[in-house]
Amino acid sequence: MTQTGSRIFPQFLRLGVGLFLGKLCLLGVHFLAARFLPLADYGLFALLFSVNVLLYFAFGAEQSTVVAREVAHAPQHTRRIVREAMFMHAGVILLLALLWLFFLLPQGSSLTILTGGLLSWLGMEWLLSGPKAALRAQGHAGLESLAYLGPRLALLVFAPLGILVFGLSGLGLAFLLASITGLLAGWKLAAPRLDLGSLADLPPFSSLWQRFQGGLLLAGASLLATAYARQDQLLLGLFKNTESVGLYAACASIMLGLAFIPQVLSMIWLPHWAASPRQQDRRLLQRSLLGMALLGLLVGLPFWFWADSLLDHLFHLSHGEGVLRWLVVAEVLNMANYTFGVFLRARGEDKAILRALLGGFLLNLALNLVMIPLFAATGAAITTLVSYGFVLLLQGRYAVQMVKTGKVRRDSDLRF
Image (cartoon, rainbow, N blue to C red):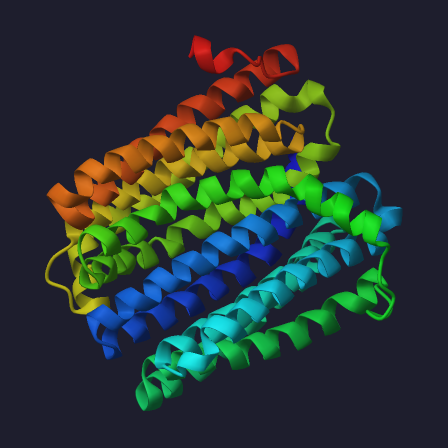
């Protein structure tokens, strides 16, 4: 276990620094938008950014999981794997760009510019998700860290001027400029190390179609995972107003500092667990859960006790500390969810994850329909906590079955 820790800790440190600083940059952009834009405009930006996150996780984050797993098993095929992922993403980006050109560009409003900037950001994230995952699987966590940090640092540089001069439109332009910067820098970092060759060499259509089909299940799982965390803002906008969305989004943006820990660890654990023998599953899972629990308490307690001060100093909000405290508890539970989810993914149990997330999504949707009209943002935060706990129980049950029997029983949901 000491040898395992000595291999994982340097990667965690190199990747963690970049992700932490990147989260701080995004957090800074949220702070600027909340401070200098009307709360309703910030709520609109938060809604569109939530949709952006949903789309990224559907076709980007989960495909990076596939790429990392495949490269860990067959490093000699890295070039083929990464190029197929990039061209598949390019096709989806082209489709979304055409929809934007036909339906939003003719309007010529600030909303058009903002959505265009967010779309360019989404395209950059999708295109670089495969190369970054391959770098991580090959032990180049520091380079992935730089590729992640670069566009977020550029966004933090461009956003203040854009927001102060052009408002919501300027924020969209900042996302556009940061996307171009990040794409160029990320390709320059990844291409020489992965020997990606020229983009003019198109992979066979059959291999692209096969990869797209294989990613649909993971896309569904990821959409559910992100939707049951992000649908709160969408439903708040539907039942209440964008100011309620702005309050909830302000609290959720503070959680970025807590969420980066399980994200970094899960990205590093996946290729390690995928290559480790099954005899080590019980020990690895126990140690990982214990570490996540200690980290969650250590980082979550300051957020809990200083919730009112954080909201006052960062957003000039005199209310909402209850929302933030509920979200803190929910995020601590979600850290254990990350652990179970990575373990099940590493063992190829994607369908088990999909079933757990489907249950959490349906529960969250049903509770939100009741809680949001009654308690607004506080109700949405409580619902998030309950749904995270439910998914934790399901994924924990699946993980225990994997450790004991080597597979997940298909009737386990009914038994549960």
